[in-house]
Length: 478
Image (tube, rainbow, N blue to C red; front, side, top):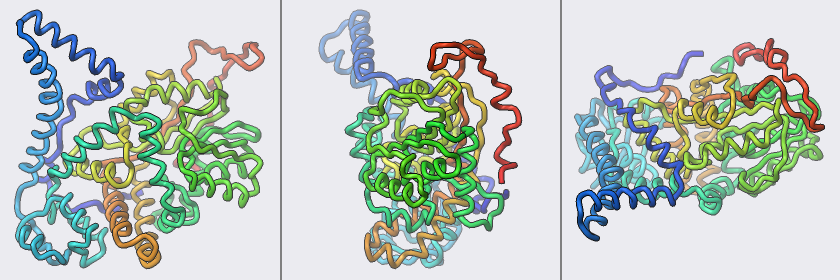
């Protein structure tokens, strides 16, 4: 499948690619407990005082040096570099694409590139508007806007994102996430369509309908975990329950879903009734950490793990492993920024964290995900990059959203309509160019030998060849 056209950048603009160092240490620090993060600096300060002398002021200076030199200065220098590399005059006439309602804003950026963050905030607050289709306009974003970190971006990072990524308690996660999906099922239906599946579809043709692509995707997931009649299936972050109902109807599973949203749970229960499988579908409204201790034949997790956070990711995977039977399969679908980022990736990521997916800081490169899975005792069987499928999916969501503008504005207002216009149009482009992509990862437990434990405490051979040989890859599925 060919990728949708993603931008009109010139070769020289690819110099905006950022660095890739330091991520391993950052991931490690985020996993550390609060006690460790406090105790280590205190110990280093004590050692420094013993070696170099000094009193309370030396202690205070040393402790302040850690956040100043470890966080504040690097982030500030990163922002400065983004301004430097994005300098230059616009190569397209902004007046051709955008009309200004705020004359002061127009005067401030006349003949200049506007920072992307300033642009989308001005659009959402009705200080300017698109003259042409927003998606088409954003294809020309490098000719019109600067991909730089602004004061507002830094404020959000230090005031919100830093706390989100270092805390991730049950109370905080519920407060950050539940209200997003309780906004209204009609709100999401206006772009997700009948399927109500908030993840990438799988297409064999760019002109296929969203519904057909999502149906293929659901069958793909069910086949990847080798669902069979009577299996116990757990879906972590079940959304509106379509996968649960689909699995129960077409594969005969007993499917349990977990979500933080009451609105999603209610919709999912109604969908199970609609599919005639209400007796085999259960939806729990609770944090994944509060799930009862039981084991399942297969576990699926479609883009919920990002919200788990880097801090809790390893513990999350260990919990999943404990809930998976020895011969079970875990399907993990996860989206994340690319390792060799450019500044647009960071600007887009901050927008997404601020307005669309709060506290989803585990949206990391593939290397982080695979490393964490192997650390937790999983064997990776299949990894597929489906970013272009996601791009096409989001573009179809965008078309749905724009076509429902009147109904959306009437109920939710212009602000929410415009926010989702930016989200969907920009994200379709981001996925097409690989700034952020989605991976389908199939995992099993890594056993110490070829014998597994079964419920009656007897041992039987675990035949890997029988389980995997002849299983078709995604490209051949219909």
